[in-house]
Structure formats: structure tokens, C-alpha cells
Image (cartoon, rainbow, N blue to C red; front, top):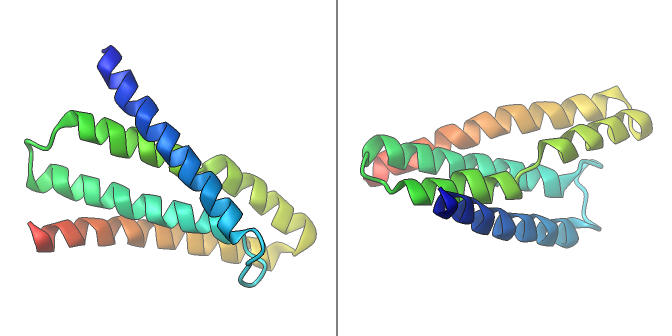
Length: 126
């Protein structure tokens, strides 16, 4: 049990650091005034979850420790729903409903499409 927590902790630490690094990288750059750092990490995290899901479907022997490290830990630390929610409130207050709905739409549709893409990539490669 302790090993499982350590795999999650390691993945979460790396994911959180990369999310922070992404925020610093995108700090000055905003396309159409959208929070690009959160959008980027959420879409990349969805792609990675799709890849992991695809690996689990195609390779049932895929080690559980890697699922804990990558899906639960890394993606859990890297992606962020709370930032997404907060940034939507900010967009509503500063940019209006249209910007917020655009961000929500891209995030949700793009997130689902990224998971599908990750599964497809694994199916094509394995």
C-alpha cells in the first residue's frame, strides 16, 4: 500500500512542477484572452490519460504502478479543474460570457478529443 502512495506522490510532484513551469511559460501569451496554460495542461493531460487507457486495453499486463505514477499521480498533479473553474469566473467578470463559453467549449470538446486521440494512437502503435 505504501508503495502505491509513493508512486502517486512521485507522479504528482513531477506533474505539479510541470504545470507550474507551463504557467510561467505562458504567463505573457494569451490567445483571445484565454488561460492558455491551463488549457494546454488539461488537453495534454487528457491525451496522456487516453494513451494510458489505450495501453491498459491493449496490454492488460501493463503494470499498475505505472498507472498510479502516470494517470493518478502525474495527470492528477499536472491537470487542474479548480484552476479551470476559477479562470472561468475571472473570464465571466472581465471578458464576458462569450469568452467563458469559448474556453469551456474548447476545454471540454478538446479534452474528450484528446482522450480519444490518445486511445487511437496506442491502438495504431500496438
